[in-house]
Amino acid sequence: MSTRGAHLVHGDRGFMTGGSLIARAIAPGVDTLIDAVHRKMERGGIDATLPDGSRRRVGFHRPGPAARLEVKSWMALVRLGFSGSVGWYKAWDLGEWTSPDLVPLFELFSLNAVTLGDVGRAKGPARWLNSLAHRLRDNAPQRAKANIAAHYDLGNDFYSAWLDTTMTYSSARFAGTDEPLETSQLRKVHALLDRLEIKPGSRLLEIGSGWGTLAIEAGKRGANVVGLTLSEEQKAWADRRIVEAGLSDKVEIRLQDYREIAEQFDAIASVEMVEAVGQRWWPAYLDCIARNLRPGGRAALQFISMDGRLFDRYARNADFIQTYIFPGGQLLNEPRFEALAQERALSWEGREGFRIDYAETLKHWRERYEAAIATGRLNGFGEQFHRLWRYYLMYCEGGFRGGAIDVAQVTMVKG
Image (cartoon, rainbow, N blue to C red; front, side, top):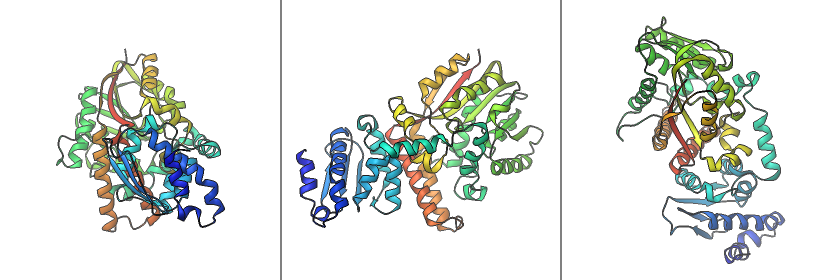
């Protein structure tokens, strides 16, 4: 055992002198976890106060984010050690650990994700159970609608309370720090439409049409648009907005699975929908694009990807997001997805990543979410629900700031 480990076990009066058999049993595992973080974390630092009142500072001499937390119960570290990000959230929700700002902590673990390896990932039975639960929510055609409904059919009143007026639930692209979120969201939409070279009379398919913003903006350019969604709530909202915009003759939103459509389009757009597909269905998703895109036609995607060095571990172990937020969801392994696209004669061009824009988008959403709570616009949801969503928004913001995940736009041309 290292000298750091000896300090933790033998110096921990509150942990060891209470005579707790559970505490004695878990002490070696807790010590191993802290020691592993100390050895493997290359950037940034953690200032932690432990349940016995002792203070542990790890990595503060290294450049990078500085995170502070108070571990109020040793069970928090046990949950982290055995259930990974799922257990870490459970511990936070139970009040077993706290922090004045969760974002630097998540940024720190994102920044060091490659060197930390399996530290903080579920192990043994916990990994199997998490993975089994995730596989049971696979996005097969008979299950996909239920998975989408679990997140997006929380209600239009819920999302409209804190999204901007465009009702856009994906990363914006900012021109400056003081720019309104709505302006940045429309910039993102028009950047995608520009990639598609949309002209009056162009026929556009949108896979995952959300609340209809991109379809409406394309309709304003004169395109004839078919948008696909599995969310009844989103379709109802989009249909109303299309009528209000006077575009009923240009834009149609269908409640339809992408695997069912077989028509010809000049262009295809899809914004952060492929994350709801899952690795098993990547070929089917790309088959949809190849099948429905005319020769020479253009497709533009906005997608979220996981660092390729982390993907296999991530794919084996359902994380907090997959367990609590997006059932059946999975980020892309970009090199593998690109290879599948090229097998279908779809090029991969003009890739632009903008992960810090997503971090800033999430920060905006979190501020707007808190304002919605304060003004009573989210009174229909309980405090535990709000805690989950606060955690989710901070978890994602830290992930993008640290670089383990990225967001990008890319153009594919059918050749």
